[in-house]
Length: 140
Image 1: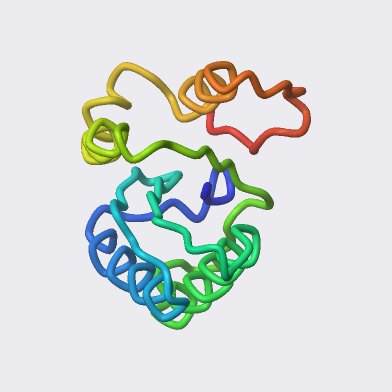
Image 2: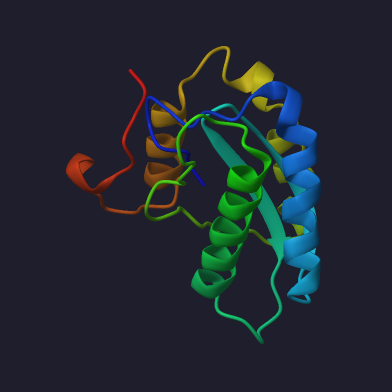
């Protein structure tokens, strides 16, 4: 999930509180959170998804409820919004340890690569065709 480019950036001081809230949303939907982390402009969430919910419905609920939470906390002068859309990739059980490590090392990882570069690399790794104009708004 990506915050609106150029504004609505998640302050480091509130990350833990936001991640705990998102964890609660996921658990209340009967799903299993495996890992969560990100930077000021995006969040990675690894979920063990049961077949009783559509991924798009879960992401919609996470975005809507966490936006309301952030706005109720008044972390921003204006209104907080996540960007439209999201990226989702599936992994096998044997890959979980490396994905959890990847998510946990976001700060280190992004010292070498921007969110835009990371996202495009993932799309290419999974052979997803895309056009730049349909991707997220990017901080440049």
